[in-house]
Length: 112
Image 1 (tube, rainbow, N blue to C red):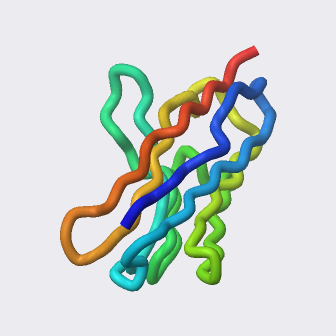
Image 2 (tube, rainbow, N blue to C red):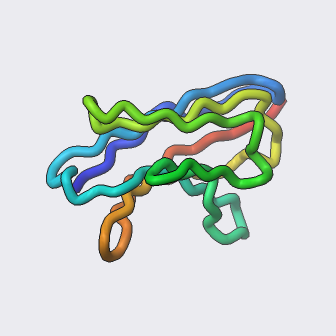
Image 3 (tube, rainbow, N blue to C red):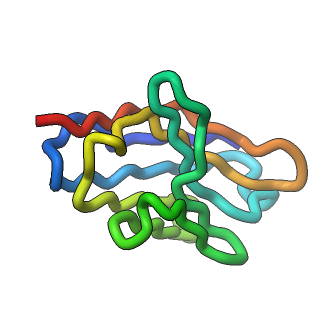
């Protein structure tokens, strides 16, 4: 499975961005897809994941929405009311029995 993420960039505080991640290859093995992020000097953390259930990190609840288009094997992360502490490299992941698949990261910078 290959994951291609896109949509990062620079945005001002309070702004919005939408990330997308398209899966290709053996997608039938995927049971869920989601997003993690890693800020400088910090560990990678879960942002949101969509599978049997949809889960969000407490820090993004009410601001971020994960959407899944099964026909396109694509997930989106709509990010609203962005804050400077949302600045991180965002990684798309696909869940399967075994180690997750990971896409390349996309940088999100929230700064005035």
